[in-house]
Length: 87
View 1 (cartoon, rainbow, N blue to C red):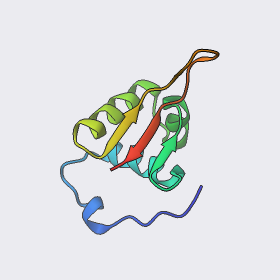
View 2 (view 1 turned 135 degrees about the horizontal axis):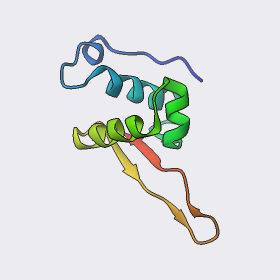
View 3 (view 1 turned 90 degrees about the horizontal axis):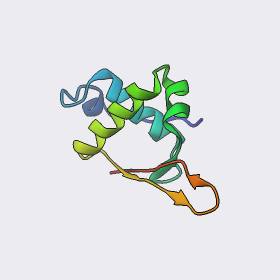
View 4 (view 1 turned 45 degrees about the horizontal axis):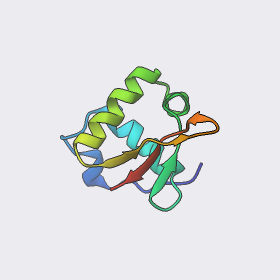
């Protein structure tokens, strides 16, 4: 985990609810440059939310233009962790 600077305008942003902010901050704190590779279950453990709640908030963050989600699949191992890009 790394230290993350959170801008005042992000904290006061009325376009995001508290859970969306928590998920986005968790992604930011785990990001390598602009991307982050975590499962919804791992994100849920970090922020104390259920997997379905995390998935709902991730979809909302994508729809609002804060992240992009790259679903990944391997022929050998099947589905892989999603790759999240911070926009």
